Amino acid sequence: MIRWLFVWMLRIVAVVAVLFAIVYTGDWAIYRLRGSPQSKVTVNKFVSIPQKARKTEIDFLGTFDAPCAVALFDQGGESACWQLRRNPDIGIEGQ
Image (cartoon, rainbow, N blue to C red; front, side, top):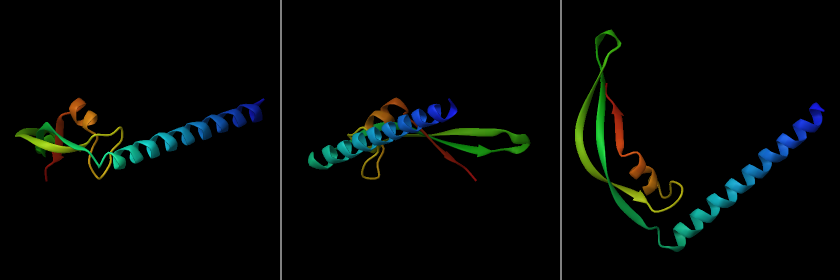
Protein backbone atom coordinates (compact mmCIF):
# COMPACT_ATOMS: atom_id res chain seq x y z
CA MET A 1 0.00 0.00 0.00
CA ILE A 2 2.72 2.49 0.95
CA ARG A 3 4.85 1.48 -2.02
CA TRP A 4 1.87 1.94 -4.37
CA LEU A 5 1.23 5.42 -2.94
CA PHE A 6 4.92 6.33 -3.27
CA VAL A 7 5.01 5.20 -6.93
CA TRP A 8 1.94 7.32 -7.78
CA MET A 9 3.32 10.36 -5.96
CA LEU A 10 6.59 9.98 -7.86
CA ARG A 11 4.70 9.79 -11.16
CA ILE A 12 2.69 12.91 -10.32
CA VAL A 13 5.84 14.85 -9.43
CA ALA A 14 7.51 13.72 -12.67
CA VAL A 15 4.50 14.75 -14.79
CA VAL A 16 4.31 18.17 -13.12
CA ALA A 17 8.05 18.72 -13.65
CA VAL A 18 7.83 17.77 -17.33
CA LEU A 19 4.78 20.02 -17.86
CA PHE A 20 6.57 22.94 -16.19
CA ALA A 21 9.64 22.39 -18.39
CA ILE A 22 7.47 22.32 -21.53
CA VAL A 23 5.56 25.49 -20.60
CA TYR A 24 8.75 27.36 -19.62
CA THR A 25 10.54 26.32 -22.81
CA GLY A 26 7.54 27.36 -24.91
CA ASP A 27 7.36 30.71 -23.14
CA TRP A 28 11.08 31.28 -23.72
CA ALA A 29 10.80 30.32 -27.41
CA ILE A 30 7.82 32.62 -28.01
CA TYR A 31 9.60 35.43 -26.14
CA ARG A 32 12.65 35.05 -28.41
CA LEU A 33 10.65 34.64 -31.62
CA ARG A 34 8.70 37.83 -30.90
CA GLY A 35 11.97 39.73 -30.61
CA SER A 36 12.19 39.87 -26.80
CA PRO A 37 9.22 42.22 -26.30
CA GLN A 38 9.56 44.58 -23.38
CA SER A 39 7.32 47.12 -21.75
CA LYS A 40 7.37 49.46 -18.76
CA VAL A 41 5.26 49.44 -15.60
CA THR A 42 5.05 52.27 -13.07
CA VAL A 43 6.08 50.95 -9.65
CA ASN A 44 6.38 52.43 -6.17
CA LYS A 45 9.73 52.21 -4.42
CA PHE A 46 10.06 51.93 -0.64
CA VAL A 47 13.01 51.56 1.70
CA SER A 48 12.79 49.94 5.13
CA ILE A 49 15.19 51.30 7.73
CA PRO A 50 15.72 49.35 10.97
CA GLN A 51 15.27 51.43 14.13
CA LYS A 52 15.88 50.79 17.82
CA ALA A 53 13.74 48.31 19.77
CA ARG A 54 13.07 46.11 16.70
CA LYS A 55 11.05 48.79 14.95
CA THR A 56 11.22 49.54 11.26
CA GLU A 57 10.67 52.83 9.45
CA ILE A 58 9.33 52.61 5.91
CA ASP A 59 10.02 55.58 3.64
CA PHE A 60 8.46 56.19 0.22
CA LEU A 61 11.12 56.98 -2.40
CA GLY A 62 8.77 57.75 -5.30
CA THR A 63 7.54 56.11 -8.44
CA PHE A 64 9.47 55.11 -11.54
CA ASP A 65 9.00 53.12 -14.73
CA ALA A 66 10.50 49.64 -14.41
CA PRO A 67 11.29 47.63 -17.56
CA CYS A 68 9.55 44.27 -17.79
CA ALA A 69 9.30 41.28 -20.12
CA VAL A 70 6.03 40.54 -21.93
CA ALA A 71 6.01 36.83 -21.04
CA LEU A 72 4.59 34.34 -18.54
CA PHE A 73 7.87 33.92 -16.67
CA ASP A 74 10.81 36.23 -15.93
CA GLN A 75 12.84 36.46 -19.15
CA GLY A 76 15.94 38.36 -20.15
CA GLY A 77 16.77 39.28 -16.55
CA GLU A 78 13.53 41.22 -16.13
CA SER A 79 10.34 40.48 -14.25
CA ALA A 80 7.22 39.56 -16.16
CA CYS A 81 4.93 42.56 -16.73
CA TRP A 82 1.90 40.84 -15.22
CA GLN A 83 3.86 40.31 -11.97
CA LEU A 84 4.83 43.98 -11.72
CA ARG A 85 1.29 45.15 -12.48
CA ARG A 86 -0.05 42.86 -9.78
CA ASN A 87 2.65 43.83 -7.22
CA PRO A 88 3.66 47.43 -8.00
CA ASP A 89 5.47 48.02 -4.69
CA ILE A 90 9.22 47.38 -4.62
CA GLY A 91 10.98 47.38 -1.28
CA ILE A 92 14.68 47.62 -0.56
CA GLU A 93 16.41 46.99 2.75
CA GLY A 94 18.24 49.84 4.44
CA GLN A 95 21.43 49.48 6.44
